[in-house]
Structures are given as C-alpha cells and as structure tokens.
Length: 230
Length: 121
Image (tube, rainbow over the protein chains, first blue to last red):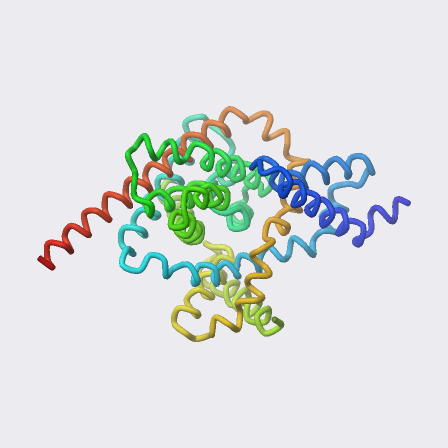
C-alpha cells in the first residue's frame, strides 16, 4: 500500500482532490479564510502525516503541478495586456503610485527586519509580500527565501488588506474609485481585488490591473533595493 | 490552444535567456511575463493566439502554488519562532502600501487633470 501512496498518480490525485474540495467549500461558504489554497494546505499536510508520506516523495510526485507555476506567471503578461486599457490617460499617476507603493513596501520590510534583527532568508521571503502569490514565490525562491513562508505571509497580507483596506482609505480621505481600486490591488493582490469588486466595477478592474503592475514593478525593484541597502 | 501553449513556452524560454543575460537579477518567468506583454503591446503576436492558453493557466493559478505551500510543513518552526516579526511586517507594510498608493494616485491625478483643464480653458 505504501508504494501506492508514494506514487505520482496518488500524489497528483491528493493535490487535485484537496484543491477541488477547497473550491467547493468556498462556493458554499463565502468567507475569505476558506480559500482553496488554505483548505488544500490543511488537507494535504494532514493526509501526508496520516499516511506517512515524506515531504521529498510529495515534492517529486507533485513536481508536474509546481512546474506549471512558471508558465502561469508568463501567462499573466496576457492578463496585464488585457487590463492596461483601463488606465488610458491616467498612466502617470497610476504608474507613479504603484512605483511609490512598491518602494515603500520593500524598504519598510527590509527596515523592520533589520531593526528586529532576523535572518536574511526571512527578509528575502517577506520582500515580495504585496505581490500575487505565484510571482511572490518565484521572487522568494530567486533571492533564497523560503517559498512556503512567502506564500503564507502573502496570503495573510492579502486577507488583511482586503478586510481593513476600504476603512483605511476612508480614514485617509481617498475617495476616487481609481485610487481605491489601485491601492487594494497593489497591497492585497487577488484578495484585495475580490474586495474591490464588491466596492464597484471600476475599483475591481483597476485593482486587477494593479496586481500585474505591482508584480512587475516589485520584481524590478527588489534587486535594486537589495543592492542599495546591503 | 496548442499554439498558445507554444507561445507561452517560447516566452518562458526567452525570459530565462534574458534572466541569464542580466545576471539572474529577475526570475525567468517574470522576464517572460514582461516579454509576452511587450510582444502583445507591440503587436508582434495576436491576442487571440494566446488568449485561451493564457486564461486556462491564470484561471486556476492557485492550484499551481499548492505544492510550494506544503513546504510549510517543514518550515513551520520558522513561522512559530518569528511570529512577532512576521505579524509586525505584515500589518505595518500592508497599511503603508495601501495609504501610499491611494494618496499618491489621487493626489497626482487631481493635480494633472487640473493642469490639463487649465490649458484647455
């Protein structure tokens, strides 16, 4: 039986099945915490422990799915192309704002990590924390961070940004729909966009664009900030 | 659809090449994303050549990072022993990014449209 549990088809079934269960649960209960990613994580870690499958076997079996992360990041280029239309005539304010947000995000992560004195690996894992998870994982891996830690933190930041974002923007008197959508997408990626869509169609569309822009700008800024601050 | 996947792999490979050329500063997949965006904007390739494959990949993207997240099984000790830093960074920087992006966009947008309005009058 052990050979079955360690086989690639079983591990692929485990990943797909757990993810599907997560999707079903989210359809039934519209609560952000029941995200397919979190549900799948809990189910898979539970089953791996229960069936005594070690982590390396799991990695080997699921490498087919992990590989698709790369092409899906490339495919985001198409999503960005589709959404860029939204900001015709507002290119300068939008790009400057995301750029400023990107710098503030990375510099504040490096600064807090320095002050509190943590490992370089943790700093590298946290730098891309405002970026959509697939890009964040690639960036974290690339700068020798811990991809799984990045995934969890990015998810947490998205959840937080989606929940408190609109109230924070109210308090700062940010009223324009473009600015609000952009802020939510830049700080809280997909989870921010989910909230932005609830606020309105303009907010939702701009927020979707902000995810791609923040991804590109952060990727360019991380090596720059690293070389200046180190 | 196959044509679309072919293009996406092509841009992935080109992205890896650019990544190597710039000393691996940026991951190849991100370079590929930027190149695909540029190729579409500059009309080197048609959107309908890649739309189906790209949508198929991006629609269920969360699935592809499930395996990477399972690594937490091994790394949860790091999460436990550094929770104060992790929580501080998450809360402080998320708030900062929201405020900075929101205020900058609104401020600049107002300033620029006022200036444009002035010229037209």
